[in-house]
Image 1 (cartoon, one colour):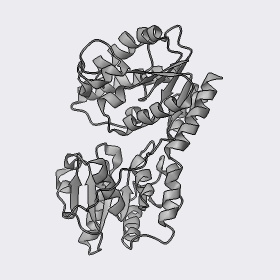
Image 2 (spheres, helix red, strand yellow):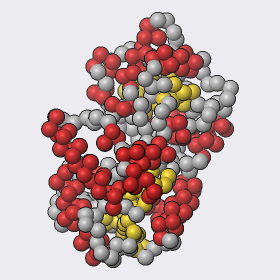
Image 3 (cartoon, rainbow, N blue to C red):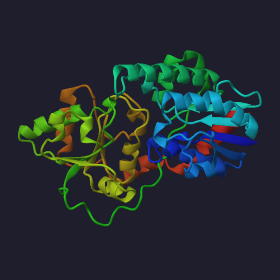
Image 4 (cartoon, rainbow, N blue to C red):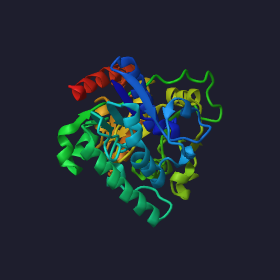
Amino acid sequence: MRIGIDYRPVTAAPYSGIARQVLALEQALLASGRGELVRFSMAPLQHPHRAIACCPAQDVPAAGLHRPQARLAFEIGFLPKALAGQGIDLYIATANSGLPWPRPRGLKHQVQLLHDLFQLTLAGRHASWLHGRVYGTMDRTLIGHALRAADAIWTPSQYSAGQAARLFPRSAGKLAVLPNAVAALATPDPLRDPTLPRRYWLVVGTREPRKNIPFLLEHWQALRDGGLLLPDLVLVGDPGDVPEWLADLPGLHWRSGLSDAALSRLYHDAERLWHPATAEGFGLPVIEALACGTPVAVATGSALDEITPRQALRFDPRDADALREALRDAATGRRAEESVAVLQAAAARYAPAHYQQRVLQLLDEVLR
């Protein structure tokens, strides 16, 4: 059997959360013994992925693979013929959409990885109103096609599966949960960042509005202004993701472009990770923090409810009083029930070995 996977997320953004899941899936398939793996992507002419993946001839910048023209050219113009030419029996699209249109006659099975549906349910960040309308129309069309055409749909959480069943009820019977793989973090840098205080809280990921970072910053600062001794905040992200008046608050430390070892150091040294998102399909930074034995404080109402242990500090991401209470609770440090062993055991459920076992189980269900 020949198994094809959509490798475009790895080509476009190799360090993104989705790309990391594609790489985990690649390793699971290679280890499965279920068949020969064939990668499909688009890439610039000199890109190294052209040596390991089937790509269309045209020169496409890696940063432009998400654009409508490139996506349609790949999924409609290139992929159906390429899959047929390679004799692919099972194809897995890896980024919420991406199945061939139309389906090649010889393709026996096709699977869609659906990370979340926030492209359809939440307002995104776009350069203009028109830009947003174009991308919104394209997302609705391609995601709708993928969920109708897929033989199976794999989501990282019950939360994402529930969203899909609500928006696409005819596809509900195809849904199955494949929790994300969370690989071990790199060995931390041997030295702490000397510009950071000894005591700090950490936030990883600030771009999308659903991450709810301004809400956290406003109430963190209000309590500090009121005299409460809260730790500084280290934010891995871009200051441009929050209003200007919040980006330069005293006690904020912005970081970006970190090496794996530097990010691991931040996780290990943080007193707590905060994840205030109003919507989350999984929550990779939460599991990475837990794997380091670092306590977490997470918002309720999304996949974070599923992935965090019952000992985690929780708050309603739309309730200012609830957030302030959580901030006050966290100010006293690690709670007795948040031992390193308990937190690391919770993270171990998402180790690559567990992921590979689940991939095998789901593959067998598709191929039955």
